[in-house]
Image 1: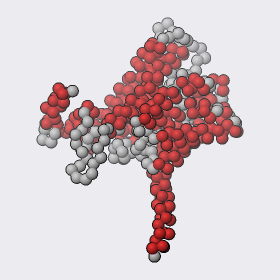
Image 2: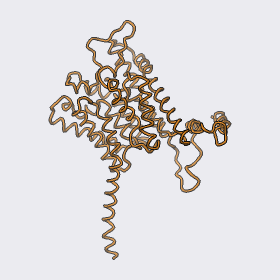
Image 3: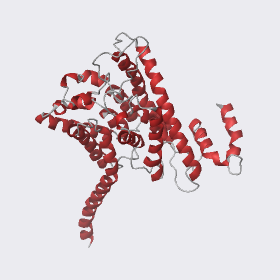
Image 4: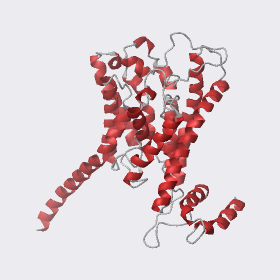
Length: 393
């Protein structure tokens, strides 16, 4: 690493004030701090907290927690593709290679479009590159259908960075989750590319192959919303994730592995995660008592393994910027996300996957929840003070 450090030290004067490439200092700083922990503090005065990890290292840990979902998603894309073609005995490696060929371009486009936009805003505003997109750049491809056109993904990513984050002031100031903002943009702007039976599985025939007759690429929730109870995968398949869906959302097992990494490192909020699952379970349990349609008849545990529920609970709802900040608020925020996600599933057949809308709605409500939690704490403390003041008087 010493030669690399020496190279950066030699190049740095060109990017600092007065250098030939002064305008591009944010890009150089982003690259330097990605490789080496920065040696500067937040200011010249006041108290500073020293820690072994900074924001970039935190974001990298979140990306690592997404790797299980990414790897399984690559395999599942290949598995679903070959299953649609009637190829049942395809090896694990062949499924994975096919999926990797399809998924890697999505990741490259996401990071390319997003980071370019971040660089432009950093240069215009003359500030350093924000680290938040290290995570958003990975999340966006994982919550997309495999058949989404690359140009649409690029447009959605740029929209998410500008409208979902930069207009609020950049990383740490946004009220909406940028990744879900990208998905919502595509869902409402290009609905045929984000819903239906044809977008979740790559069914392009290979040489000498055709798609199996009557094969459907609908998701489990899509079949349930249509009333096809016999087509809903069992809870084991749903839990493992061998079902059609977005690239990285199908496997609850992979999501739980990611949750374990986030909780072990102290990055993820266990209060939000457990509350989301509790809210979803309770809402599904209530609907089970009525059982008026296929979605109501699905068991509560089965509901938690379908669609993007687990992925949303672990990686989306716990976004530290757009979520609530108070501990009590986290319980309320998470519970309502799970509650609303199942509610949207059951009562909106045109949109059976309700996790995205539930999280975005609660993103907007998060500041209000924190406000009332803080106000309640203030009132409770004032009540404790009054008896003391009366005694002193």
